[in-house]
Amino acid sequence: MDRIRIVGGNALNGIIPISGAKNAALPLMIASLLTSDTLTLENVPHLADVENLLRILGNHGVDISVNGRREHQDGSYSRTVHFTCRTIADTTAPYELVSKMRASFWVIGPLLARCGQARVSLPGGCAIGTRPVDLFIEGLEALGAEMEIDGGYINARAPQGGLIGARYTFPKVSVGATHVMLMAASLARGTTVIGNAAREPEVVDLANCLIAMGAKITGAGTSTITIEGVTSLSGARHRVLPDRIETGTYAMAVAMTGGDVTLAGTEIGLLDTAIEAIRRAGAEVSAVENGIRIIGHGDQIRPVDIVTEPYPGFPTDLQAQFMGLMTRAQGVSHVTETIFENRFMHVQELARLGAKITLNGQTARIEGVSRLRGAPVMATDLRASVSLVIAGLAAEGETMVSRVYHLDRGFERLEEKLTRCGAIVERISD
Image (tube, rainbow, N blue to C red; front, side):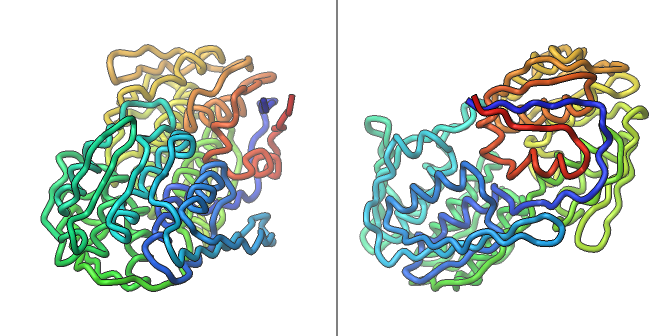
């Protein structure tokens, strides 16, 4: 099992290219099930989750062609993937595939919309909370689907003639359920109005792709989305938006280690709340041509309190990284997690590096320390694992991060990107 070795103490300087967003690429790839034409996606990241979904889509009959990676002057790669699903070969998404990644459950929407039926295993993924599928079931039932849980699978069937447009308001915001409703409603008969919809940029990106495919969608990016169903969708060409979580992660790394880094190929407007928190912590952040410039002052980090919230609030996917940054703040900060009930598993690992963190329910109190010291640590989930990398970059001595397969699910070429900017980071394969 691979490990990542970090020798801390170096400031980061240079350019870090930002990859396409995993959280946008996955639903966009699944949207290929909605059409018999070719959907071409540019800027698709090379990640374990993406590769796993490619296998799942192949199981459903999607023909996949990858153009390969093209390297650019700033060290970035671009990858274009073509998806063609002439016919759905299998409407079952089996446990052995779906259990590896929660987002693969989302195929239930396109399968139901296009074929009128689906049998999809209940999902797996990171152990950061229960994340029930109730919202998915209720949303699809509002469109007329009959849903039954049997033997760890959801058996779904559309009414004769297909799904029917309806008005449905989510009892709580769910990005995944919003993705599924968008895709399913695009081929439903009549008009669907989704209330309390997720507003994330990744939802807007999916909507824009579906519109390019012929869907009639308005309101994406607001809490109310209207979809007028169409009888079929065509192919399209779409570029995956930059990864805002990767952007925020590297911005926090620079804020913690010090240095001057340009994050290339991203947009500051994708994560206003997180950028504001990083500025309050003492880093200089500015928009530049085709990216964001971060100037960090690692020995002058100010304490900042944050609360995770649905977009446009502070992202839960950046909570662990920000906590890592706050371990070196000059004072006491508080991090409150409101999205997932079990997303503090990184706390005990940060403590191994010398962090002083106490938990009270869903709030962590972080007392900043003057220095961290390297130690062996273990990744527990995707975002927790990269928080340990950030802390290791600023710690004295060597930090060894185990179970880095979590990192490979969401961060493309992390060691290479950091090494280009002066960090001492290497992957060790046992």
